[in-house]
Image (cartoon, rainbow, N blue to C red; front, side, top):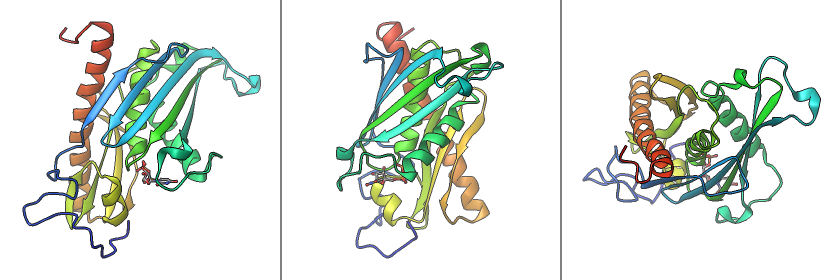
Length: 244
Ligand code: UDP
């Protein structure tokens, strides 16, 4: 990040990015609902080279008890990166970054989950990043929504997430790791497509007001693509091949 000169060509003269994509093309996305028999709900996502597994437990009793709320259920999210998920071994202890990402994913899911139906209980979301390649918070948030739905937790909408950004002075969809490192801006977005509400928006980098607007619009287009794949993952699991 920061617009440093890089030997890497982020965008060539034909408008093709460093991994062969067009500016408005997301990476390959695969989402699977279920998979963990000991969790109440689960999901697995591959988003480009990101590979993330999510397990959901609850609604269940809250321990420690003083954390419970008599008016509503609570959502707890733990985002964790495996030491082997990145090229340079990551210390398994929770980092500041993992604490921040856990918090933003929790806050991005809360508007979607009907926690008020389960007072005094907790819904726990465990996110394990098995392989990371830029954009893990969006991929994890998208998979967590599917895992919550798979657990049968009532939701107002799914939260679909995708980042947009800026590299080589161009607004791009779905920022990969190289573009995150050498590009000019990264904007992860979480979006509830049916309700048309944004639940996560972060920005690392500097954009003009016009670029900001275009970035949000581009990110939302990505979220809508993710949303279709989330729905497909759930219909594939619950209605066979999903054509229902
Ligand atoms: N990353 C890494 N080591 C770390 C943390 C992150 O190599 O300890 C890489 C990883 O590929 C991650 C990327 O840096 O996806 C970008 O991280 P960022 O904090 O921007 O979050 P993300 O884009 O994954 O949501």
